[in-house]
Image 1: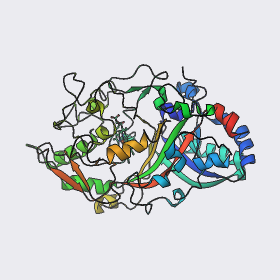
Image 2 (image 1 turned 180 degrees about the horizontal axis):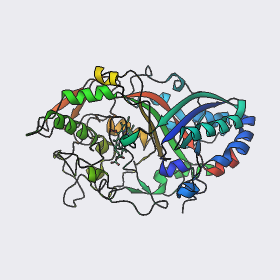
Image 3 (image 1 turned 60 degrees about the horizontal axis):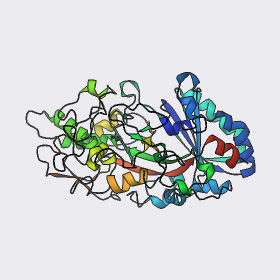
Image 4 (image 1 turned 45 degrees about the vertical axis):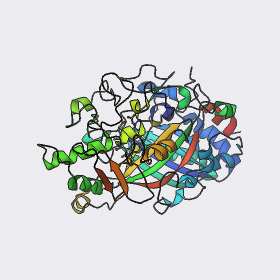
Length: 444
Ligand code: N7H
């Protein structure tokens, strides 16, 4: 079974707190960093075991992960068997469809970020106090390069991302950690998420100390919320009997594949169903196929477009059941930035940055995050011919994006998006090591 006391907690559950700070750092003095990390920070690292019960979770959850250049700074020279990680995310910007790095946060342009601390809690005060504990313990053995403070949205929007859709519904259940998946939840071999475990396709290339770790893909994804809303307002689906508002809501839901409540459009094709959205036993219980078939229709988009974000990124029966794609990721992202102001809403224009601090874990970046973005979201021939781009995250290096299937009254109609509603501000690839690797390989 999995050694839950050896695996960092964010990997298996996402830290699922209301506040999270990402502290990106450089290692200024490796010997000093190692000894201070070991004595001052290692005892604070939250394990997967601690995450299994509320009573064992500390006030602030702390995880740490290192970039490829960070491993170099620590003289950890083994090859991890992941080309995207070795190259770093900057070198991957073109593969991910980013329009260059002009929109990237400047600190991500380069390879000077050696690692990231993830600190999560329910209050700003707890996070700030633990940030202080960690940075004080490490002193000038690190340089603080960049900090992103993220927070769940307030009130009724809690758990919803900035476009307004409930997030965090569908994550795979890792066999050996969660053996009672909810209806419709993917159940994946542990090695799909955790390096060196059963089902890791690159298991033979891993150094022993890498077992129990996972690759973390971090992306700061800005969301142009007033612009997205304006697009929906301007392009309502003209379905019989629909008001403009209903037509706009339907367009948004078909872009995502879920209504704002989380209800899947495949199960509720014409209107939101908040009770369905809120019910974990039902809100993920669909395959895109009908009547228990193991394959979906290759032509029928009446219930859900092939281009819908959740269908692009997890095609379920489109690739046949049982679902053994080997391309599941475990998402642990959280929104950042303020609510839309009245003046932004009135002008349909973003003036203050907001978005998603995207985090995904996988045993292979090339099979996980990178594959989903590059070969599914950005591939106009996936899920079927003429599917077009994923309208939420699909990226075409800044050029227009065609999207098929959004209009159920005319499935052959293509909609051209001239604005990217999600704008990459860059990020980095990291390796989140096991606790024993931190103690035995990273800090000696
Ligand atoms: Fe997505 N959104 O608000 O539209 N995502 N995502 N994502 N995403 C999901 O089912 C969103 C991004 C996946 O199992 C939901 O948990 C936004 C990237 C996967 O059926 C919503 C951004 C990648 C799933 C959003 C963003 C993915 C998923 C429904 C960027 C990978 C699960 C909630 C700002 C490359 C699919 C849920 C499944 C779900 C949104 C980014 C992947 C609402 C706004 C970059 C695998």
